[in-house]
Image 1 (cartoon, each protein chain N blue to C red):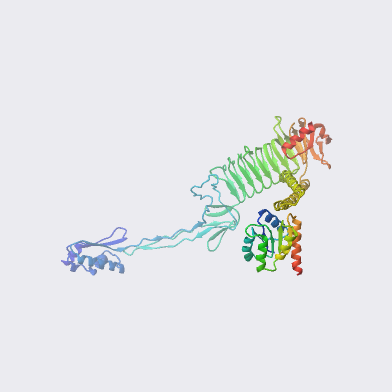
Image 2 (image 1 turned 30 degrees about the vertical axis):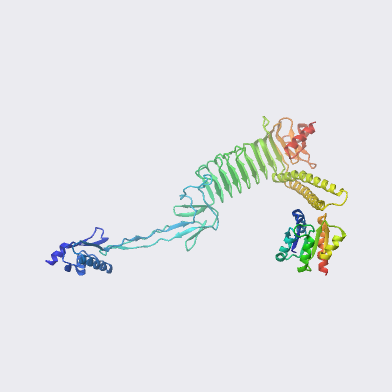
Length: 123
Length: 495
């Protein structure tokens, strides 16, 4: 499965990449903000996106809105420190499929990814 | 009258080898008398063969004279042809391939690497046999045929080690040294070096056995896929054999020389040598200040081990261990050097990983106990710490498992059986797998040391065939691989 990681922190991307690699995923692309991600989705054609909220240039929420205009189905998991209920609702309304709040453990990320993909398969 | 004038004024220059004919017409002769026919007649009188080419040359000459009869006209009108002799049959060797007995190399950069012995591999194209040619005959201007000599056959002979195909291609059938002598082309699978390995031979890298009649000089490297035998002394050189190494004159390596043998090592004596031996070792006289790892057995009942460190995986039979002067000598029996090295890596890595884990855990606890909501950067840091802690815990578990597996390997494949025939000197350190036995005084042999089921050293007097209580004659304590820790351990026990 092709997965796009969108986070301005290289360390966070590395952690997510490591978890995904342990899960058996090898086709992983990285983007450092929303703009960078938008420029890569066309060529990479991801099947899952893990997106941070707070990033320079284009934040995660703006990216999700822009991305959903061209792609309504590819699952997006928001991985962020924004844990307030209102923010979560805002993200879900913008088109996010699942939500992981930082700090997270590798197990939680693993669990959310599996959960999201299972839901999608059922639909 | 006209005939006389012609005879006097037109003549032919014909050299003794008759390879050319030149007509000379002196000035003043009536041009009407100078015709092609007259010139041909003059040539014919001298037996020169008149060909089409000759006629053309005469026409040009006559015209030149007729145009200017006041000047001497001269032209070489006929030319002979020399014979072209055939070429002898020969071998054209592939680029860079110079067989033994025909080394005409100029110079190379490193004199150590400038080897006189070029080895070839099985299946390698060596060159091509170029057949002899017939050549072509020549002819004088008088029509005499000059015969060409045909090229001679080489009379090439080959052995089974090379194949000469119908189209002349020569291919190696075995690895070895290409040798061409007395028209016999073959590949030698044993390389015999009649003198020293030195600047006259360069380093040797041979795909077979090597036998050196004299010795090996400082800094030279002898490598062979088979066995290496040296009849004379090996200095501070490197000897690498896929199979056995036999040093009949011994080796004085001055802490620079190295021996690597895939199988057995047999030597008269070894001084300041480093090396790894794949199977058994037999040293006849002395093993001095050397660091050797022996993967098989040490069968040297008359050998004195003085100074250095000898690690033996299998049974060990030696004459004397240590020296009166207290030269630090370590003899480790029932240990596999490679396993020890890996165990050492695990052992050194473990505390480093533990320290890092402790630091991360501390930072993590601080964040957990932090009052109030975490800032975004704290939340990200906490994620990092959780990840690092998980990774390091996994690494520690792997290190512990690896250490256990290495211990199991050591116990399974290494044998603790040490026999000392003549004497062990005070201060010599004998390590029987995990136990150090250090004798309080010099002790005469022969005796044997093994381990019982609990891993405790057991000593047997080989003359009376009776057990000896080890702790009455020696200090016995657990072996700690790190030298400093080992000494510290001893001090604390003494205290």
